[in-house]
Length: 472
Image 1 (cartoon, rainbow, N blue to C red):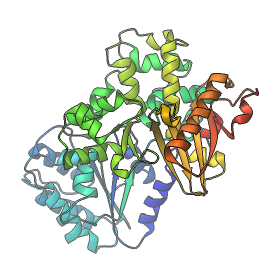
Image 2: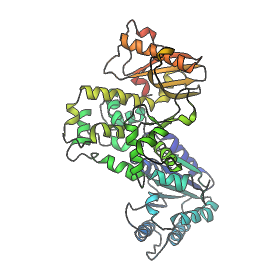
Image 3: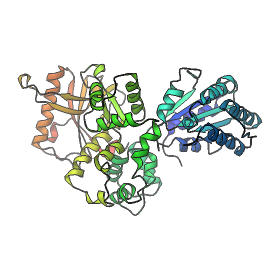
Image 4: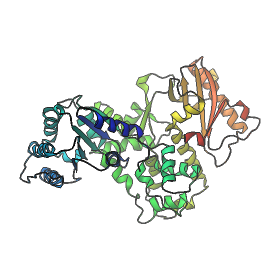
């Protein structure tokens, strides 16, 4: 059974039922479930399927491609020297097929594009010069190397420019989809336990497959990340390398962003990483954003040229916080429960999860149909102007002239607003009004695990969003 992905499956089914050929590109970060989606959507039935080799030159790649043609019932020719010849054999296989729709699935296409190969020339010739003129071909190409896919397929400036009929940028699961996965596989975890796991692994489906029945969430985390043979102990080492062919600069960017919770402007990134201010930097930032590692937003009241970039990938942030030093205690996580270090991290991690579920927050606030912008805001102190100085992690700025000023508070039970917290919220509202001169109404909004304790301060809160609301 495939969890979620309803929109993607609907798109794939529509292509099959259409009376023309389709060229579909599927991309997304490592472990996000691209291959699984395609195989499940087509019930593992393909006229031809092939996956590029992670290593090997042109000769090895073509040999493997021809072997896949043979496996599909075609006539393979291992003497082929280039991709143009190899794709002629694919054409022969398709011509011989009696299926109404010929589903062609080429996975890890980027690995096939070895140095000085003619792969893109052959692919262009196959689609433009032959397949697009038919009505019965569904060509699906896929790769984890998102930067390659974006440059060579999605934003191709050559012969494949605007030739795609569909593109699917596969994103992470929401909390609701992760809960569906957990329930389907028979785990009895509470929503708070699912949230704790999500704080570390995000909605990357593959990571959730390592959950083991009979173990608590803390024990599972130790087994998956910190045990001597933990399956994901070295995941970070492969994560960026699998997506970007030269990952060093990308890692420098995420390392810099990981050091500053509120994010950085482009100028701050350049200063911290020593990277050159160029179109290449723009490309790298766009690719990191397309993979869901970072987000780009405009701080409230600031011009677009001062956009802020923020690291939001849960696993990357967890790695820098707890794994970068090569932690060797196999029971590390179980031993850290309720320590100040973990409690502080959970508060920050909960904020990130909320930022990944803005739509669910809007649904709870009853503004799903209202056009909004989601911003953060850092306001410098200015005693002469009466500004205290504030860091506001989430503002939902609405077209109905309301701003929801959101405070995100993770708690193991109902959250109690203290006098200090109430004062801090009032200062933030005042700072925002004075610094921005906004005429919008500002609604203080609390997003927390289990709601609020009713006390003398809770009545000052306009709206409350709970953990359950994030699971919708």
